[in-house]
Image 1 (spheres, rainbow, N blue to C red):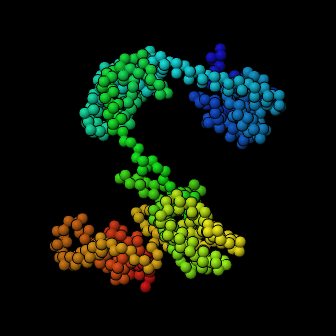
Image 2: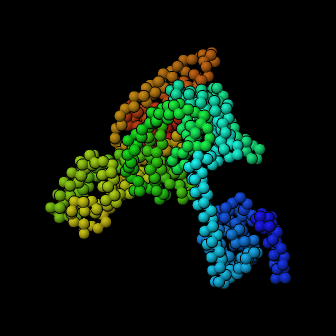
Image 3: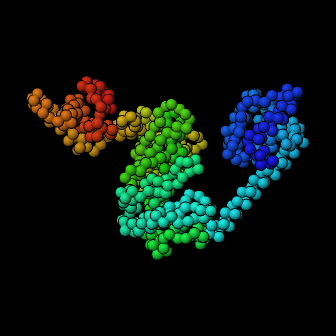
Length: 536
């Protein structure tokens, strides 16, 4: 009888009968179902319960009727949350087999006691299951889970499947003969070796696919194949038979340990981001340090945090370039004598000299500072970096700088100074990237590959002009397009070509950028605007 009422249909039938008995009170059964079959009552993450509470909040339900209180929840804390929803909506709660009235304190106390016991029962059951699993594994029993290749389960025991066992031995033997797991995977796929195919309860199948890298590693290290059971790091002799001899298994484990790369101490060291917590974009969004790995090389960036749901494009800047730029700007400020004098004009004459000499000494020591030491200095100066499309502003507290030198800070409290770094944006594929521009008038090293491209463009133009109609038709299409794309650069404005030859072009102008640029206008004014050159 109790087992029958444990089914959802039986519980609903009992609840429906109770609602019908209260028809004289105006009760009416709603057609909606709030069943959570297959979900645990230990938490509120159940779709039926969430829909029920939503309907209570919307005023669709006046009374919740359940068969037993533990059908609703087994957690005292969750029950308190449910009662809050009921009280806020003016709804109540009824248990068919337990008389409760949640509208008074005594009813709630009774419910709380019962739910405490329900929660205790759930926790005790969980402890018993864990103890049972631990004890069973200590006796070498297989306690379920994914069946390993080479075995099947009969009467809850592992039984060897001869064909699959031979496959396991073949894989381990081939691993010892191969140079790497990658090579082993290629061989297994070439030979058509697949993972264990398992028939699911619903009639479907799982497995029977080529081995992945992780699956091969799991198979090679699985101690089940030598007749052992592992539980929480402890190894027990299993009830099942081994399908791999100890010598072969130990040789495989030794090979795995030999090929495991030791942790690179270079990466084990904590990576310190110089400006973490001190940089934001023009939308006020913090820019967090992030990185990518390409061919084993780490590329670090500061990227806007888009957690605010803003539709504004996010910024992404190379961390190394920005860190170097901040260091350069701060060092330039400290050795800028007129500006240092201006910042310390309120100081007595003797302190002005000390301020200038201390700034100069600090500028020279910055280069020798570690990243952590320089970051500590920036934090003491309350430095804040704001990134926008046109420039990067650096604000720092000069008063704190004076404190570093034990100088007077009372006459000019919270004296701030702003430094700026020019930026430019460039479209790269579908992405807009922000780049740091060198200071005005700075000459960058000449890009010989870019200069070569410009020279080749003139040669390509001359080649096209010398070609006849028959030559054009005879030339392969891809070759012709390549020459045409290169020849376009011969029509760059003379001042642009001169800037490239002198190394005074914007940093984003590279050989790759010009080679892959989509369209190049013939108008020189539009060319300058497009490539970031000043208008003439």
